[in-house]
Length: 110
Image (cartoon, rainbow, N blue to C red):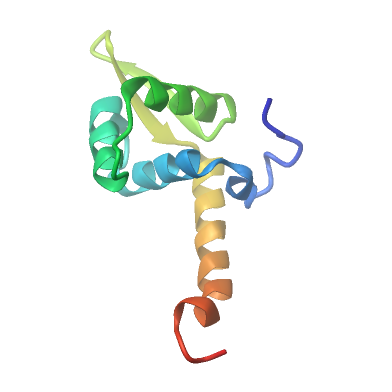
């Protein structure tokens, strides 16, 4: 049971597990995608890869959280895309990381 009390606040991705955030990020980079390209992208990213079951679990949970929508194309291929909520959340997170990460990532300024 995920805590969805502030699911409509733009920084709600902060509460998500890393794998969920990674998948949202990949989707934001690739645009609407089927699960296979998503799996490939994540497999390149994770040293030990990601299995299909894990991927579909994450996708299902993101759909339930209203961060991803699922569209069926050609009767059997599912295409996933970010919702507006997810887009706002990701850009809020990027802004936060850019704002708070400066001193940490750039050495010698603290």
